Amino acid sequence: LNRGYLSSVMRYNAILADMNELIGLSEVKEKLNVLLLSTLGRRMEVQKLGEIDLEKPNLNFVFEGNPGTGKTTVAGQMAKILYEFGLIEDIIPVEIDAAALVNSGVGDTAKAVEQMFKDHSGRVIFIDEAEAILPARGSRRSSDVETTIVPTFLSEMDGFEENSTFIILATNYLEQLDPAVIRPGRIDLQIEI
Image 1 (cartoon, rainbow, N blue to C red):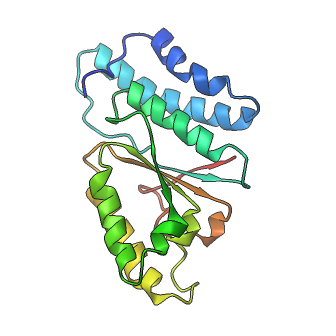
Image 2 (cartoon, rainbow, N blue to C red):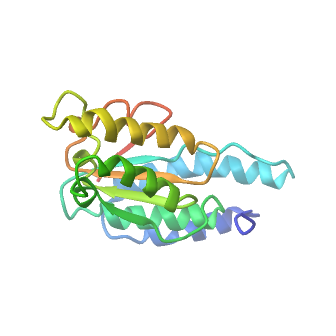
Image 3 (cartoon, one colour):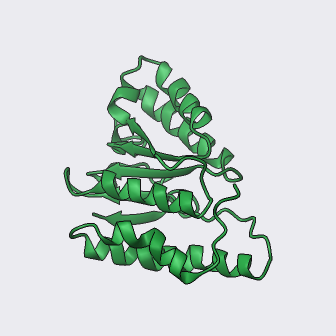
């Protein structure tokens, strides 16, 4: 990706301007600004020195909050920021409706999860109602979810460490997500919105 090499803090601030103009969400914006400045600011400094920063930053998020609190809006802003920094190939996040994914048929959901990762490589994948497809194993009556969907999701996540795909999960119930999904190194950045 060629467009994302930044040369100044002014450019960084310009990229964050749209998110900072969102009404409300001041605690969310503060957390994201600090996180992005530390992660992406380091990237800028390395690039200024002419070095190549090949390590993909772990910027996979869980946004937790009630319906209508801005999770989807913030996910869109995050995709824009990652795009401007040259970390993804498409500015528009892919919105996945977890409930529709689960309803694709018995045995078909794991295949749909694999296809989702394949079709949307290099983008932000935003999964709303993530608890529907990524519940804590042992907590549901559906063995399909426990034995195929969560392990397939984890396997696909582990396979994209080298490419420019980022995951943002939205949930109303963080405690219902499988702990392996939100462990350190996977989707461990949790923001309450």
